[in-house]
Length: 168
Image (tube, rainbow, N blue to C red):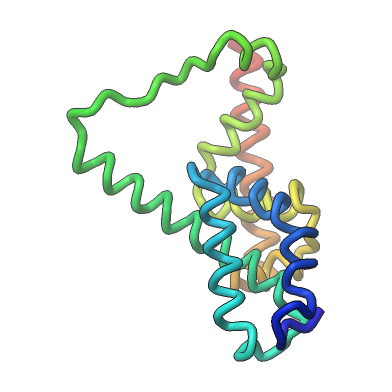
């Protein structure tokens, strides 16, 4: 959907994809997922006339969200190192959270969160957003073979971790 003039698809793109992109940012670990996505839409709006392919707006947004989530995580790691005297956040959720979420889902999400960043990004794009390997490669700016390798490594790591947790 071309975005060359105000009102010619930008609002529809926002309405159709905002919450899906928020889920993407959340799964990639952004603590402020809505802000990450809003920033991506602002950058798209500013660059809409300079996009090489006006129909690639959604791919641009996905890439932008992935990059911003990665940057935010990097920033948070640095801030936590600088402020080591602060108590780490509690890992225990509220009672409501524990009731609502099934133990298997929590174990899976924890295992996904512990994966290396690129493996986590590939899994989220492939299986939560249901992107093809090619679309995942384009979104992350990596080769198709790299997507396949990261996917295989991530699935193997998840299998090992979940099997280990099951045994304990």
